[in-house]
Image (tube, rainbow, N blue to C red):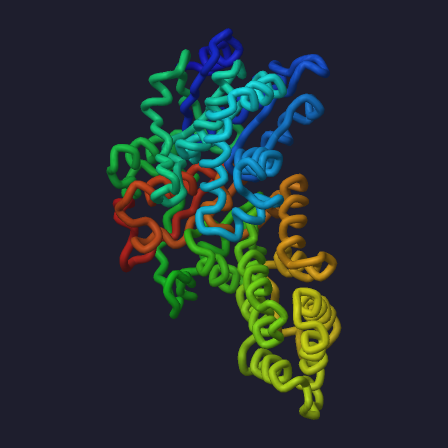
Length: 506
């Protein structure tokens, strides 16, 4: 089907239009263009764009700036949280359902179950939403589950026009058993129920960069969709480079290419243009940052896993100074290098435990001053003061310059928690602010594939392309395809000589 056919279908009187398209084939362009055309006069409702990632929110925000006052862009989980907050009493939830969701296993899925049940039981609420949002655009809908989809369909059944975009080959989140009987989205059922089902297949993303790369990405996608390996032995465009490089990392899930294999990788990374180094695990991002001599920063994305773990630890600590100190140490070691047990952590935790009664000199005395902050305030406030003091010491004291922070934004946000009544309240506010600021990655960065979904840049390195990262399963196929489809100009695949991915024929 052509771009013109999709354009016409979106603007037709059809109530439900579903569009399937590979990454880079114009889903966002078509969706944003339709959003601009669908806006109504002020006071007659807004266009609602729902996504599953903040990266996608950022892209839509950039492309609809001219009609920003009439277009609302948010994640579907934020809409669910808003509904759950408004009706929390009837749903049997606390006043802050988003906080409840974070603190409970499968909490966000349970909110979706409850919110969908609310709209089914009280269609008047769905009708009010449909009046507020007469047109709804859903992006990356392959990431939806049955209950999130049911919530959207409830608004559609009350009169909202619905336009759904998806690529089943970008379904990268792990399959799971959802709570409350919630099932995965049935894509075949959805496309069968649509008034119009359209497909896009022209690789627009690569028009200005490397058209031959775009065609190769589509061929690779087709092979992976057929559950066949991608053939790297022949017919590679000039834009695709394959480097064989063995893993010298000593720890599981990390990746550090051998020094003898790094020349081509360095040349590629130092070339002009934007760059993303993509890998599967957070552990591998940190080891790759070390490999690049810490000159390429990590892209932390929207989600802050280390910060959330830190807040949970502070909450459980409940004014136990030893537990608070342990939370600080764990956070430092998860977001930085250099804060080792021998150099820092042992003395710090010992002084907290003993109440800082020992006389210390030189660097231990400086660590003791940090410990005193927690002894004086054994909670999130004291912990925040420690982090702020550490930031100052890193800048101004040679004894602390060996501490190198990888998760810079997480570190900064953790230091701000002390300004709030509780660590949980601080995290909730920081998360809310992050939703609206929608940060973009730096020109060159290292990231996981999950965090890069929805983004693009000129050049991409995928490392390592090994069996541990990309095994013979459908989720790994989707992850590999997402990585392939991020670059507009050049792609480098770093494939170990031992244990290469079975999804590649090499």
